[in-house]
Each structure stands twice: as C-alpha cells, then as structure tokens.
Image 1 (tube, rainbow, N blue to C red):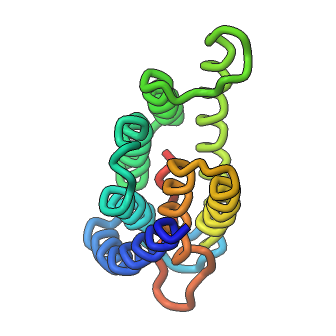
Image 2: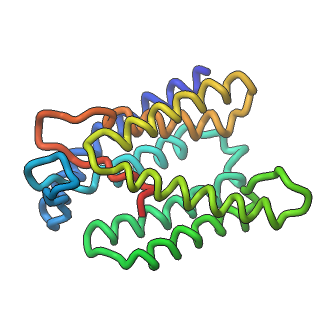
Length: 206
C-alpha cells in the first residue's frame, strides 16, 4: 500500500496547489455559481474546482501509476477527459441537457470500445447496456448532488477510500491506484471552507 499512500499524498498536494489557480481563473472568466433557491451559498462562488480535481487525479497517476497498466486506462482517461471538457463548457456557457446526455453516452461508449465494461451476462449486449446506464446514471447522480459545497467531493472521497481498501484486500492494483488518486484529489473538497470557496463541480458532472 506504500505506492497508494504516495499517490494519495501527491494528488492532495496537486489539488492544494491547483485550487487557488482554478479560483483565479474562475473569477477572471466569470465561471461562477450564482446563488438561487436551490443553492446554500449566498454569494457567487467559483465553479472550476473540478479542474483542480481532474488535474490532480491525472497527474498523480501519470507520475506514480504503474506503466504496466497504461493500456488498460487509456479508455478511462479519454472518457473522463471528454466528460470533464463537457462539464467545463457547461459551467462557462451552458449546454442543452440533451447535448450533455449525449456526451455522457459517448464517454461511456469510449470505455466500452477500450474494453472496460461489465462482465455479468452471457454475451456482451446486456453488459454494454448496463455499463452505459451505470456510467450515465452515476454521472448525473453526482451532478444532482452538487448543490452544496463539499457534498460531491466528500462522497467521492468516501467512495474512493472504500474502493482503495477493497482493492488492497483483493490485490487489484489498477483499481487501487485509481482510487488512491481520486481520494487524494477530492480530500480538499470534502467540507465547506469559511474562505472564498471553489465549488467542487466534479469532473463527472457534465
């Protein structure tokens, strides 16, 4: 678990360093979450925290991930990058819900084409359908939870911590590295800060 602990620490350090930059960019380009009846914050809040999370996650894996697994995570990286880009565009300009849904489906299909999908049913048809529904469902579940500072980041960190433990017990080193990077990247966003905050709009929330 030494490598996983190092990945957690590296991702956390990268998120700490990237968050002030993301906050400045959000203010500079006006990517702010405006208060309304559904939100708990009372003043415009920067929305680019997800970029800091995404960057910390990716860089920690690139620096410390096992190169043996690179081919297996290309699809995950490409799909995550695509959905993160959609989320960035949605935060800055706004996207029609059908466009966001289509983008999420495309990202799920990228995973499938790279060989990352469920393996439960005979044949591949139902497995592929389940994978697409799962990815799109989790993406939108995280998006709908994103109405309170720290909520999405906190839940992602808790889930990643459990995945990390389970991966260590079952010796699934690839899953362990992914979970460690996500845990470290999200730890900074697990609770509201009294200072000028940066919303943890998750990379998955297109």
